Length: 92
Image 1 (cartoon, rainbow, N blue to C red):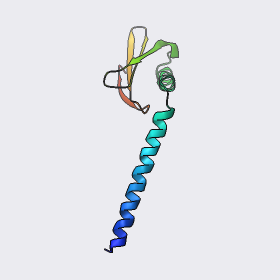
Image 2: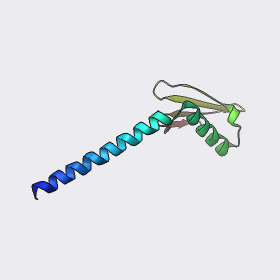
Image 3: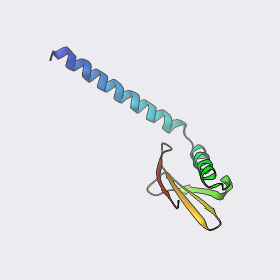
Image 4: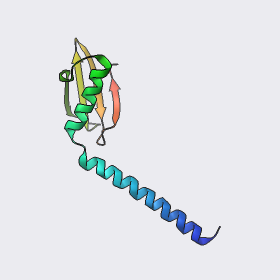
């Protein structure tokens, strides 16, 4: 394999890594706690028919946020990471 092809492949690899890092940084800079809470509270309301007001959030230990939704004694807990992804869901 020619040497220039190795450099092109390395350059493409670095470019893809830089784009991924930029995207994650952009998400981190623009995602607020309120956005994440509203998203998963809406998800809870769609799945269960409950109200968004059934949910409360607190900072998590292993996760960024822990959203706890309770209605009629049934509790659902969502663990949310810093990028807004769902880490865990308990109480289905």
